[in-house]
Length: 213
Image 1 (cartoon, one colour):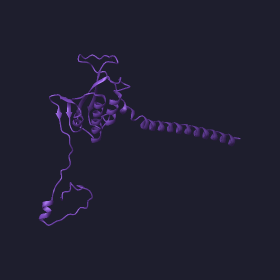
Image 2 (tube, rainbow, N blue to C red):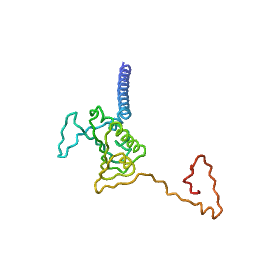
Image 3 (cartoon, one colour):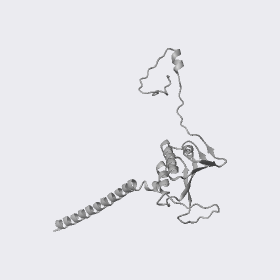
Image 4 (tube, rainbow, N blue to C red):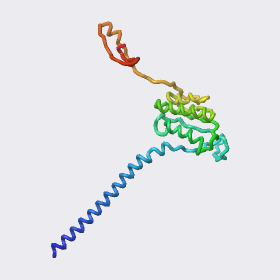
């Protein structure tokens, strides 16, 4: 009888452990699935969201006006273009939302680009520039740029979409362009010592940066 009682107790303990570890495994699985869902489903929503902010007037007052009141749409070009919330996609969404449903269509009478950026990626800079160009022509809305700090490279490219640009006295305004190199040319040295080089290419100027040309 003693042996039988011990066997029953061991079976009960074993069943309890199985149930406990099974429940723990199920909970861990739910946590992992939840984390994956947050990463893949919720990761892009904060970046793509357009925030509506009521800016103060000349006297510093913030007041919610009627839906028929004309407004100026301010778009911040702050930081590195193509990073965080400053991408071609986010600016396009802001422009789209300004013509409904966030604002009544036709309410925006001008776009103000508030710029403080060293530039960024070529693709995003070009996407923002073209989106502003399309917006101006489609809705007949002028675009103005206000530079408060730095405006270089891709930021200046975006600013060129504006009809007029303004800047603070200490703002740093750069240029649009790219840099390759430094590149060295040793063609003359090779000719001096009778050294020849052969490169097989297909297409015009495929080896334009070759130091042997």
